[in-house]
Image (tube, rainbow over all chains, first blue to last red; front, side):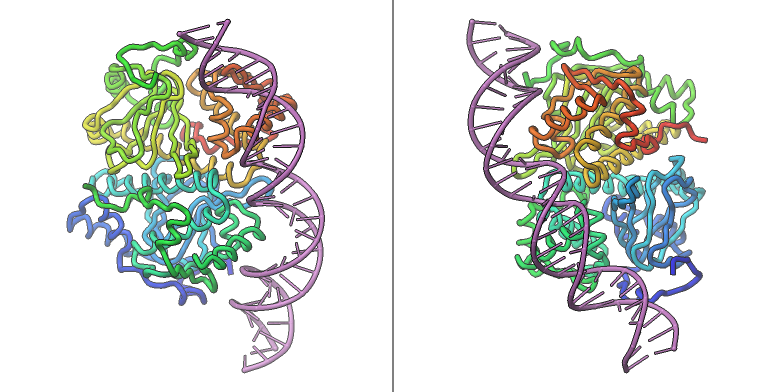
Length: 257
Length: 257
DNA sequence: CGCCTCTTTGAACATGGTCAAATAACGTGG
DNA sequence: CCACGTTATTTGACCATGTTCAAAGAGGCG
C-alpha cells in the first residue's frame, strides 16, 4: 500500500474533491498579474501529472532535492521525526501548494514531505524551475510570493504553539484550513473535506493524541466545529473566528493595493 | 529612549562586539559563489549605515514595507503582539541577517521587527532590492537562499515548541544561537555576548517568566550553560548538543557539495 | 542614593500527558 | 455480503509539567 504506482486512483481518491482546473494559477494570480503567456507556460508545466498513494514520502529529510512537487489534488504534509520517534507536522500542502524552492538552491532537505491522502502531483524538474525563474519574471515573483506566504503561515503556527491554549490553538488551525481551502474552491461556507485524523491534529498542534481528542470534543460541545469522517463542519464561522481571534492577514490573500 | 536618532552610539553600544567587516558578505559567500564585482556591489549597498536605539521598532505589523533592513551590529527580533497583550518572539536577527524580501513582494507586514540592543543597520530601499534581484543573479540567489535558511529555522523553532520539554527547548535555542554567532565571528568556542533577558527567553520559548527562570537555573545546575550579565557561557558544547539532540543541518551552513 | 528593571523564591493551581483498556469505523479477503 | 484484523476514537484515573500570584533581592544607571 505504500508503493507509488502508475495510476492507482486509490480507494480514497474518490473522496478527494476536484479543485478548480488550475488551483495554482488561480493562487498565483492573486499576488502578481500574470499574462496569457505566463498562464500558458504554467499550464504546460502542469500537464504532466501522476498519482501518489497515501502515506508515500515525496521526499525525505537529508535527500538532495531534484525536483519541486506541486500538489494538484489531495493533501500532503511536511514533517520531521525527532530522535524520540515523535513526528511533528510542520505544514500542510493543499491543492495548489508547491514544495517551495528548496530544490533550486538548498543542498539537502531539512524535513520530509509525505502524502496524507492519495495525491495527484506534478513533479517539476530543477531545470524547469531554473528556466521559469530566469525567463519568466512574473512567475518567478509569484513563486517567491508563495514562499513568503508559507513563511507567514509558519510564523502564525509558531505563535499558535507558543501562546494559545489547547482549544484556541485547534480552533485557529481549523479557521486557517477552511479559508485556505475556500480560496482554491475546495470548501463552502460551512465546511469542507478534511482528511486529518486526531493523530494528525496531535502531531500538528503538539498535543498528545488523548488531548487532541478531548480538545476536539470540547469544540464540538461548544458548537464551534465538528470533524468526523474526514469532513469538517463549521456551523458559525464568525463565532469560531472570534473564539480564537483569527486574523487572516498572515495569509496575504488580499490583492496588492 | 524609544526615539531613533542620528548617531546615538547609545550606552549599551559599547557592549555590542564588532563583527567581521562584512558579516553579510561572509554569510552569503557560504551559499553561492560571489564574484569580486558582486562583493563590490554589496559593499556599496552597505556603505550607508545608521544607528537605531534599543527598543525601537524598525517596522510594525500592518505597515507597508518600503525598505529591507540589514543588521550589521547588535540584535533585533521579529515579534507579534497577541490580543491578550502577550508578545511572541518569532525570530532573532543577529549581525549579517536581513529582514528578508517581504518588502519587494508583500503588501503588508504580518509581524513587527524591533531592535533588542542598539543596532547598526543598513536600510536598503525597495528599488535597490529590485535592481539587485534583476541585475545580479548570484546576489539574488544568495538572498533567496537566506530566506530559505530562515524558513528552516522557523520550522526548527516550530518543532522546538511543539515537541521538546522545557530544558531541551531552551538548550536547543542556545545551541543554535551560539553556532549562528560563531559563523559571523561573534562567538568563541565556549561563549558569546547574548543580550537576551529571561523575559525574552520566555517570549521566544512560550514560557512564563517564572518558568524561564527555573529552566535556566536548571541548565545552570546541570553545568550545561550559564547566561548572566548578557553573556552566555557553554563549558562543554558537545554535552549541551547531546543533551538536546541538536542537529545543525537545518541551518544549511555547509557549502554546496 | 534611589528608581527601575531583571532575577529569584514559594505555594497553590491549571493544563496537558501517560497508561491502560474499551468501543467504533474502515478495508480486505473469503 | 460478512468476518476479521487494523486503525482511529473515546474514556477514566493518576501523574508531570508549567502557570499564576505575590513578594523579596540584585544589579545597573542617573
